[in-house]
Amino acid sequence: MLGLLVKFGVCELIDSYVMKVLLIAFNRPDLTRTVLSRITEAKPDILYVFADGPRLGHHEDIGKCERVREVICERESFINMKVRFQERNMGPLYSVKCALDWYFDQEEEGIIIEDDCLPELSFFHFCEELLSKYGPSENIFMVSGSNFIPDFPMQASYIFSRLALIWGWATWKRSWKKFDASMKEWPNYVSTKDLGYFGKKEKLVYSLINQQYLNPQLRTWGVLWRATFLVNKGLSIIPKRNLVRNMGFGHPDATYHKEYHKVSEVPVEPIDFPLTHPSNISPDAVFDERSLDFYYDEKSSVCS
Image 1 (cartoon, helix red, strand yellow):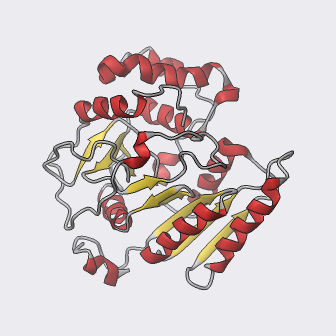
Image 2 (cartoon, one colour):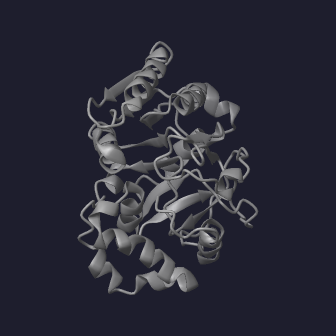
């Protein structure tokens, strides 16, 4: 990886850093091919691929899942790859949980990409550097590739946030092991009044998560991760530039994002290296409020 790191001007990473990526796929061969091509460009040292199986009663899934696996296997000669193909469908919650559990049974940190999230190439090196820098920082839970407000003024290359933006992200085993699919700590957390951090968006954040606490049938992995994130008062890292485009909105095989959303049009730009690091580790409440305003102004029912 050293050659690519020098190309991007990253001088703070050590030669021996190993780039590890997890790709999570299902039944969209077109998107999988596009994202896998970008990952191949980044030349990870090892790529883990987890693909869920076809759903019962969805006969079209059989062929689509098979084509996804063919796309993945086409790349085996280009990348050091470990694959796990599920025979039966686990669903969007437990397939992602299983994928991340499987990955972190073997690794301590890594970059996570779902099949509809297309990163800009500098995203990978952004994650590499910050995974290395903040590995010992228990309160920092993740590195995000998304920034819904790319014109937000930042003095450094990134800021800290209380939002868990998961369209292309990176994290550590120490963070993921706290993931709580049962939401057992949610009621205790709510009683602390910490949600007051979100100001006028407090009720929105509460309602989006609490509806899944009340009805386990509605639960999605993304909202459960955000609940875990809040319960543990975790921080995320948000880049100065938006580094990932979500291609899933409006896709005929989308699980949740079947309709257009303006977030899919937020421009993607490379981030400059060497990175400039913030002097303080504290969340930016103004950024968080603006991001929630932007994403939920059209439809606050988006659940993942």
